[in-house]
Length: 418
Image 1 (cartoon, rainbow, N blue to C red):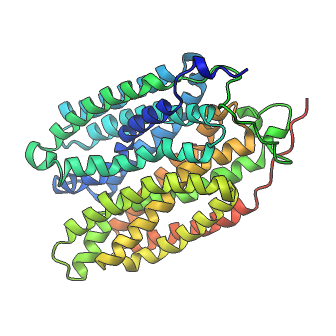
Image 2 (spheres, helix red, strand yellow; image 1 turned 180 degrees about the vertical axis):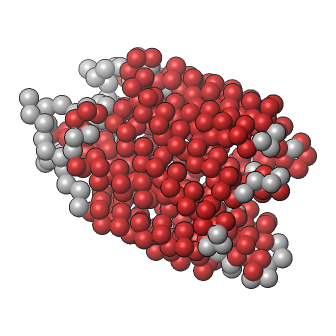
Image 3 (cartoon, helix red, strand yellow; image 1 turned 45 degrees about the vertical axis):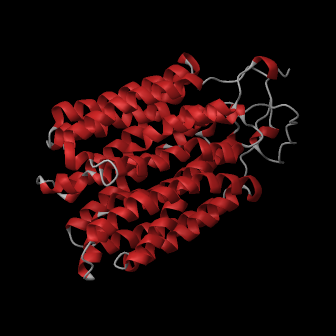
């Protein structure tokens, strides 16, 4: 039954999702803090360890969040994520100083856990309200995550000068308060539509032959975990995430080194622009663009194209980083393709295993992001300390090319029977 007259405007869900994701995207702004921490005595590996911890706890807690959502509801879950994220940054500002273990726990563990609690909510809620535009709406729902990096980097740096004027700890404190308040506000609209609701005038298309939707019910997480398709999607996502997350972690450190070696005087400013503007904007735009394109091209074809081009660009980036124009181009393309992961893999999961349990199922698929968050940044940090940043980019680029082949081989899972 259609109950359009009794439900809220579904576009409010998109507004709430963007507000939430802008704050959750703070994890991508981590690179703006790393130069000052290195001046305080941190190694490159230590700066990347905090980033990796945040990504790992983000992914692990997201699995728990998927199981909690049916019990406590999406609104409470989103708000809880905002509270935890805000407290993590607030504690880092009040008590962290430049102590590695304090920052590791407050921002890496607690902050990452808060992101994990809230992240899946806008995706799951958006898919329920927009079954007619799954790719586009998922892209919009997670676009704020990409754009958030630019916002928080620039506020801490050249726009707001928070770090220069107030210091590292005060910046963490301000961010913690803003995250707390904003995610709670965005969470107000995180509610599922009534059972049986569908958009006015929309008729569900006939299920594709062999898809999960053509069976008698959607795949539960337990059933999904028994299929080879799950592991093929997981590995593909992990390889793509490794390349993107390593690039994020090194998007300032490596270009500064390459630009300085090339004799560029304002290397730090150029590298900062590459990350805060070109990568971040492309990361957000890529989420919307890849989501919209996948509604036309199909999820698998889109992922094959995205992974193949990402592999080539990541390998070439080691030679592009020392020239400002090529650095900006490389950062744009890597950011654009990296952003596509977050629009394509939720919808690939829904298309393959159904939408009913997408909150729980995508939590398991998103473990790939945690794997990539550990492997990519740690690889980049350790090879960077050894003076071999280019090898890190080569390894991750080759993995992306392998991922394109692997996802091409994915076939629909066996139909569930009554």
